[in-house]
Length: 333
Ligand code: EPU
Image (tube, rainbow, N blue to C red; front, side, top):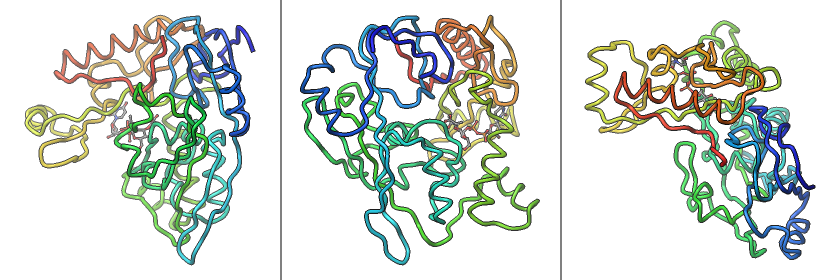
């Protein structure tokens, strides 16, 4: 499709018109697009657009989207099941399916927006679980039409990162992702808010854990259908232990996560709140009032409005704490 409006393909709800928009529903269709030369020139492969910021009202190039579907069981034993999932499956539909089948592993990632392919590219994470812990292989097709399967160890997974985010790796399109899930109960409830909710309910099972996670997320994170946003806008910064100790002397109750002997992670949401930006607006953009890590489109914001807010927030945090926070969202120019 030509001159395609991407408003419904980005959860910020920004107006952005792409020169071309193409969708493929199978590996064969992708290969045909490659053979026909449709993927020459500037390319942007998107998932559900839940982590994208279009900085300009025009995208000069081709936007590509996978609608490869399917959840297949590859093999199973008494303890595990190995499944192969199409990159275009909605992530939370996959989680719901796993919970229905009583397969353990994905439940803490309930309601994370986006699709399976993008989840594998950006290593989504929440409530003590990262998707890399569940992935075994990532199937790809590159711009020359060559198939390649990456073992999980080859994917360079780190906090919200993988090799697929590198500029030189954008030529690989994720087509399917393989996961290993457990048939035996194995819960991650170490997150404070989860424990409190479970205690209130008095029992713990897979369905309850999914419900609890959904309730916690819904209480903090705005629904993009109501208020445009892209989830956490910034990554939680990792600082040196020296820096952490220096701050901790002043802010005794500063939340933090231990990384290693020399590093500590500090929640960016806390830094932003302490900098006075929680709930503050800047034109048609705002910092969410229930979770300062989320920037929202109050209606009619442009990419430039969101960038202006992002810059103001970063500057405030840098001036107050001497910590540079960086966006988790992908800026598209
Ligand atoms: N906090 C504040 N003020 C705020 C927000 C948070 O003081 O406005 C404090 C909280 O009180 C808490 C700490 O910061 O002590 C952490 O907050 P929270 O549990 O809400 O998690 P987060 O670190 O802000 C990360 C992920 C989320 C994920 C949650 C739960 C990143 C960038 N974000 O947020 O992921 O859902 O943990 O695991 O790592 C996303 O990536 O889009 C996303 C929502």
